[in-house]
Each structure stands twice: as C-alpha cells, then as structure tokens.
View 1: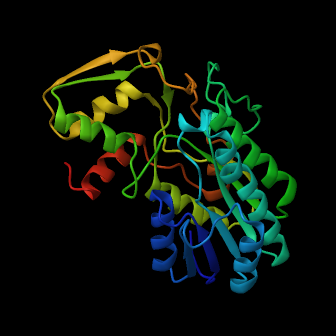
View 2: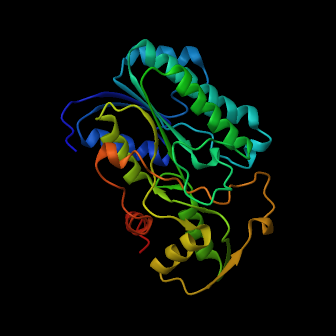
Length: 288
C-alpha cells in the first residue's frame, strides 16, 4: 500500500505497546504525529480532550489508551467504564468537531467465548466480564457518536512496550523449570508491529467501519506458551492446566478467535501467522 499523503495524527495512550509501534511507524512514513501518554491527556476528561484536539486539529485520532487490568476491572469497574467507555465517546465527539477520522481498538473479550467457530463482525457481542462490558460500551459509544470511525477488534496483543503473555512466559521460564498454562482458552495472538501496519494501511482507504485484525491462525494459551518456549530452547516441563485451576476474579472467554473477514478485502492482504509474528517479536527483544 502506498503512503503518499502526509497526515496530522493525534495518538492517545502513546506509551503503551501498541501506541509506541503506531507512533514510530507513522513518523517513519513522514506523518505529523502528536503522541499523548496518559499523563499528557486524560481521555476521561471531556474538556481536556476537546481542547487538545481543537489545538492540534488532526486528520486522524488513534486511541490506544485503554484500561486493560481484566481482573481489577471486576471491582474497579467504574474506572474501566470511564477509560474504555466514556473516553472513546469524548474522543469521538472531539473528532467530529474538527472533522477528523477516529480509530479505536476493542477486544475479543466482548464475546462470551462459547462459539464453535471464529467470531465475525456479524456476530453479536455478549461479554462475560466487567472488562468485556467496558470495551463493549466503548464500541457502542464510537458507533453512536463518531461520524467517521474505524473500530478494530484485536486479541492477545503483544509488543515490546508493556507486559503481555509472551513476556510473562519468558519471565516464568527464567524463574522455574516447571510452568502450568491453560489449554482451554483459545484465540489469535496479535503482534503490535503487524497491527500498526494494518491500521496505517486501513486508514489510507477511507473505508470506515468495524474490523477484526489479528495475526493469522489461532492457538490455546498452552500452544502459544509451547511455541515461545521452543523458540528460546527452554528445557523445562510445560504442564496443561484448566481455567478452573486458576481462581481469577474475571472469567475469560474459552474460544474467542476472531475471523478477519472484511479486512483482507479492504487492505489486500492477510496478516502473517501468529508463529511468524512470535518469532519476529522474540528477535526484536533479543530472546531467540
């Protein structure tokens, strides 16, 4: 895809793993990027959001800010709803005022995980956790308020910025020669570098709407861990577990694979396999 027209872009949540990769990629392509971390811009404050957007008058706003503490959200649900629900509404309204397009990311956790096939953009959400509810609220606010929006659902995101499943597995492998990982949670890992590229290609098209965007293929948490450990040559014991073995405040969906139908038809390609993405990420952080 050709990136010819220089855009003015405001990125929120720019210090997170996705925010960092999108910021770097856009700047590499010569776009004018204002990167706002949570300390620079609290998206739950409507006045601050509108003031910032009016000042910069971007062509595109990309919201990478999110409350991602899935278990904490069970008790801190108001905080989760503010960041994941009210924040996107504020950004949508601010985008409209300057005629900017709005990019917002949601999650596979808006589904209940009881499906027997990957979820498409035609399937109805039914979250089973407060976190999932907060992300669904954000989707509804964007659909209701943003005039021009790209709503992108992702799953099992990993990148070099923050803590994620790949980094957790590496941490466990450094500390122990025995690791237990659940085999009854299945989804599609998503590498932030691939997601950033697909986002940039998508926003060049002006084909607004709802998309699923993950790396190709799917796996269980156990399969994912096994692949990571194989790449680093770990020789310990990997033990299959069940979600019920781990008492967590929030319930996770069992099968929440996203079908990327609609995305390839617009950007012209499928994202690389999750295995390929995992290998590249491990190389990026120097762990192969």
